[in-house]
Length: 399
Image (cartoon, rainbow, N blue to C red; front, side, top):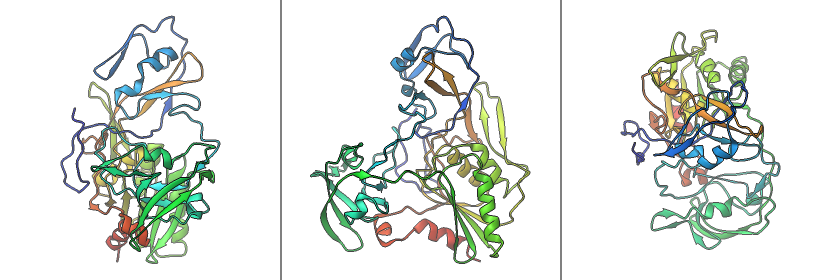
């Protein structure tokens, strides 16, 4: 299997079937009595082979930590413990500088080399970075004296400086260049407490007076209902001429929510299928009970759109429901996942039970969904407060 990825995210580029990392939704299976012994497990050629471990049974936590399921190179496989990597607990102390980067984290191990520039995509209001005068679009030239790039390679160690752990308050010195002015300056930022991350929700606004822009950052339970209500509320006072779904940065969630939402644009259609190793597939269909909106639609995507978001974008493209604008999605959707309880009674391992296949039989995992119109956010755009993808979407929906 090739580990190469395409150098550009333009429609029509050839892509290999390589794996990429991302977050995922999981499904807990019923716990069966513990096995007296789970047998032997070996890690050979990147594949974990275990005898005596079956769905729903308990296995040895020590064995799993030793063999490391992450070595499977599957974005939906791994160890999940309380507060550990992939664990369900949220950070009780939001802390740092308060910036977002155009470098998506976690980074897929098969992603192409990042050639830059590295810039601030967001600066949170009321954060230490905002207080220091940093703004979106500021290009990072160095951090604490370490250049962002050496011989065209990102010095990834600077990312740790930009994400200081609680309660570290060592000032971070950044040299940044602002595209809007062309000026370069040094800025010292002292890490501090950040506002808690808001719960996933739906934001609805109007673009050009008649196009509904619906942004949601996760496919959480009930999001389809919230999205459809937001559209109905706008329609109560405005004659809508189109809908823009903004799923940039959407890390996924419940794929069935996407099927409900796609049912507002087409009925009697299969979004994707979950297939077993023997070729048996379970079609995942749109929800025909969702009333049709009878509106044109455009979806905004980027490499932060992962898992259930990958599936949603693939459905939009394969079913010809609208255009995709932005950049290629994360390609982090190997298939639906089951959880297997470990014998410490606090942690689990997760493995895909089937593989996700697009409506046209294609694989999205490790590849992503390419946009119909390539519209990346540049440092100059961010510095000038422009959003080229949103502008293109609005133009496509112009009456």
